[in-house]
Image (cartoon, rainbow, N blue to C red; front, side, top):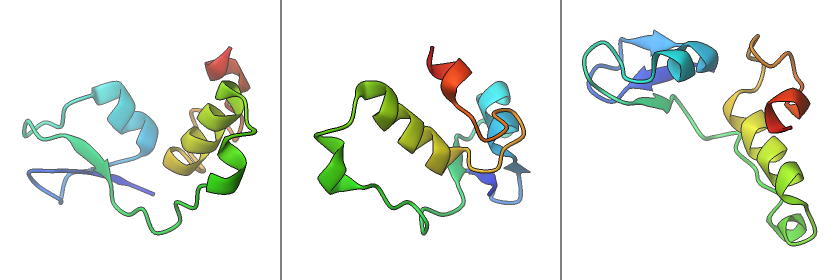
Length: 77
């Protein structure tokens, strides 16, 4: 997945690059190119801890990114 600038969609970054850079070089904000695979287990949210909810959201936004190596435990502690 890539993150695209809201001002120029030709500017693409990986999730960790977008996070570390913050604002795109053209002054735009980075947004995920798609939310197609964002399937939140809404019926389970009420039973999940805040940490579990955070891990679920992060896994959707940073899936496959090298910064987290598939684990968000260290970032959430």
